[in-house]
Length: 193
Length: 441
Image 1: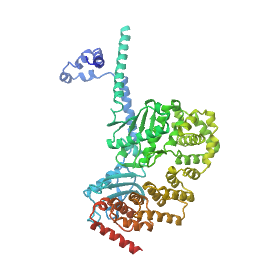
Image 2 (image 1 turned 180 degrees about the vertical axis):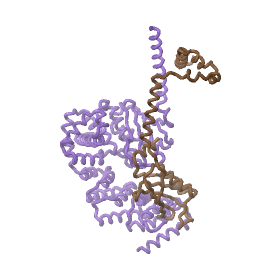
Image 3 (image 1 turned 30 degrees about the vertical axis):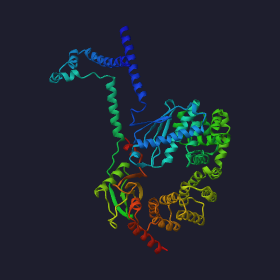
C-alpha cells in the first residue's frame, strides 16, 4: 500500500460521513415522505410535477438562514448608502499644440474630476479614433513619437496621460503612464478591485 | 446520551483532521497556491503575480539587501530565518496609473517570517529599495533579538535609519542613517508642541503597545519620534553598527528616557549642519547633496563647496556623479548667486562638449539635461555638436535635451530617428538647429 494511502482513505471517508449525516438528517425530519422524495434515489421529474412539494420541501428557517438574511439586508443598505454615481467624462473644450515635430499635446477641459482609469480610457478612445496614428498638421510626414493628454478642471491640471512608442522609437503608440494629481478618495476606492 | 457524546467526539476528530489536511496543503505549497509565480532564493521565497522577469529583478534586489545586512550584522546571521516575501503591486499601478494618495507599502509578520511588499511606481527603484530595506531590517532585528518584537519604537527606529541606505557604484551598502524627512517632521512637531509635550509623547512611546503605536491618533508622528530617538542613541554609542544596535537593545527604559534631552538638542541643530558633517565622508557626499537640494532654505555656500568637491577631477567622478551634479545645478537649489550658478553651468557644459570626456559621462549629462534642464546658452552649442557625434545614444540624448531647453524651435525627439536615420536626413535637422542658433546670436 503506498504511503499516505491510509490517511487519504480516512479523509475521504470523513468527507463521505459528512454528506451521509446530512442525508440522514433529511430522512429524520417529521415529513419523512417529502424527505425521501428529496433523496438522491428519487426521480426529480416526479417531484416537480407534485404541486404541494414546493412548500413541503421548503426547509425550516435555522440560524444560518437568519444570518444570511441579515447579511443580505445589511449589504443592500450599505450598497444603497455608499453608492456613488460616476458621470461619464464630458470634455467642455479641447486644445491641441505641438511643442515638437513629433510630439502632440492636448489640453482637455472637463467639468469635474473622474476616476483614474477613465482618463486613460478616454484618451485611448481618442487615439483609436485616428487609427492610433495621429499626425502633426504642420509636419504630416513625420510619425508622432509621443502624445500627451492633459486634463484640467477650471485651469487646474488633474491628470496627464502619455502614450509613447517603444524605446527604439518604433512600433505602435502605447500607454506609457497616467499620473492623476487630484482625485477624491472615494473614486480610488471605487476603482480598486 | 453516551452515544450522542461519542458521535460529537467523532465529529470533532473529523473536523480536526480536515483542518489538518487543509493546513498541510497550505504549508507544503507555501503561498504558491495564491500567486502565479514563486521564486526560490538562498534566503527567502518570493511570491508574486508580476511577470517573472520583473519579479526576478525585485528578488535580486532583495537578495542584495540580505547579503548587505549579513555584512552589517555578522552576529545576527546565525539566528536569521529564511523569509517568505509576498510582492504585490497595486492594481492601478500595474496598469501604469499613478495617484498621489499615501498608503502603507509594506509590513512584516514576525510569527510567520512573512514580509509583504506593495511598493508603488513610478517613483523609481530607490523607493522600492527603501521599502525592502525597512522591512528587512525588522526581519533581521526580530530574528536575532526576539524580545524586540514588542518594542515598537526600537524596531521602527532602526528600520527608518536603515531605509535611507543606498548601494554605491561598487555595490556596497552605504548607511547614512540620517532620515531627512523624519528629521524635518520631528523638528516641526517640536516647534509646534514645545519641549514638554514632545518629551511626554516620546516617553509614552517607549513602552507603547502595538495598538498605541500603529492605531492611536498621533500614529503619523510616531515614526518621526522613534527615528529621532534611535538616531540620537546610535550617535551616542561607539563601535560597529551591530555593536551600537546591540548596546541600544540592552539599554533599560530609564536609560532611554534619560537621553530625551539629547534628542531635543539634536533637533535644535539645523539639517544643514547635519548634512555638512555627513558630507565630509566622500561616500556620502553625493547623497548629502541630493538631500540638501530638498531643503527649503539650504546654505548655498556649503552646498556649492560640497558640489565642487564632488566634481574634483582628482576624485575622478563617474557618470552618476556628473548626472547628479547636472540635475542639482539645473534644479531649484536656493542660496547660490546667479554668477555662481553660471560658473557651474559652464563647467558642466565644458565637460559635455569636450571630446576627451568619457562618452558615458557625456551621455549622462545630456540625459540629465533632458530631465531637468533649464535654459542656459552654455549648453546649446555642445548639444548641437552632440547631434553629429558617432554615438547614437549621445545624439538621441542631445536631441531630447535640446527639445527641453529651447521651447521655441520644434525638433524630432524620437530616439529611433537619431540612432538609426541616414546621416543625410539627420543633417537637415542639425542644419535647422545651427540656423536657429545663429539667428539668436
